[in-house]
Image (cartoon, rainbow, N blue to C red):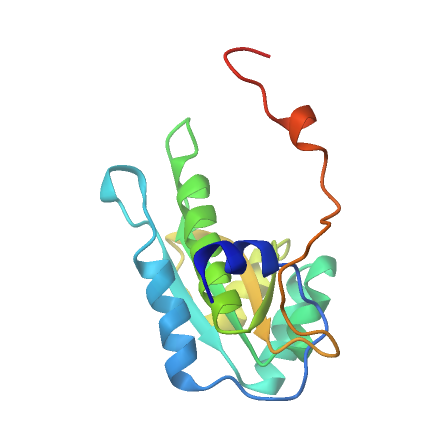
Length: 169
């Protein structure tokens, strides 16, 4: 898929087919996250990949909005540091890693959706990440059920001229 097609085809997918994701495709998605830009090349992330059905089910309980993780073919937890500076650069960097992975997934025809983590203790227990790591983003992955990823011609977005300001507001 061309980059622009991946950008315009990517949407949050929360209903997945039962098809497994090949390991090479998961590795490519993870590599996209590893190569994401970060403040001063800090790379504050670690990625925990989950494909075990029981573990996905348990992981879906960390936040009400993470229900889609239970039916995903795989999930990636993007885990960051406990402490950060006043500019919250780790949150920004984790978001860049997430978007890089979501675009790489879309390029492969794999749907994705992200969710936060409300129950960090449960996430820590399920995933086993250390006490000095805290922020987490969950990303569910799988082939979309019913509707493959194709460029969305009329996205439900605010109009371009309403969003874009040139020079000043």
